[in-house]
Length: 122
Image (cartoon, rainbow, N blue to C red; front, side, top):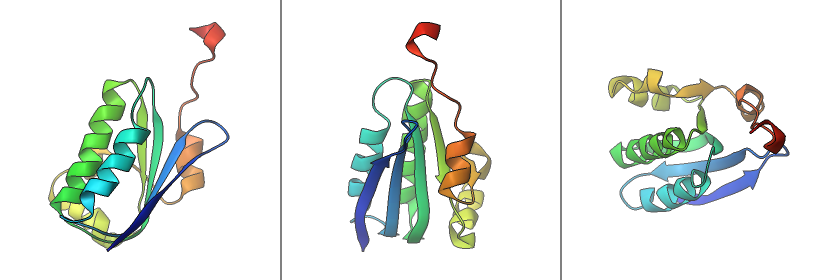
């Protein structure tokens, strides 16, 4: 069972989506909705915290890939916080480990995000 996703915005404007529990057939739609909301608009900056995820099937992987594609199509950034060997192994088995920026904690992920250009620089 997935716990309701926690979504917050950091002081620098990066959206942090915290997913926990199991992400599978019955729970992936809720995760997808949260990730879709986080990756909408121009230049989204999103960190997905997966440290609380205990299980993920192909539907969870699909939700992550969808979020990555949406972020990149909008000239944005998406990083994953993963410490679980299980989740890292899943991404490696489906040959997606190198497709994502992966961090050990939220602070490191936030620090790695490129700043959004100011309006005067545009």
